[in-house]
Image (cartoon, rainbow, N blue to C red; front, side, top):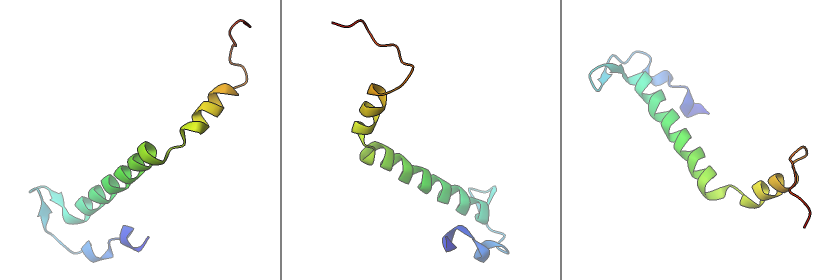
Length: 67
């Protein structure tokens, strides 16, 4: 949580890529890192059994004809 608050970049006038203030660039990269972390959690840790269970037990879903 402490890394999210960038009080150390408030008075820094440097620019990243020639147009982006360093404090804003810090937040852009921080947000991209968080998004990549959640994407990796989604791809590698998401329980597929949960989706199968939810699909099988969804109320209101039309069931096919009985065999």
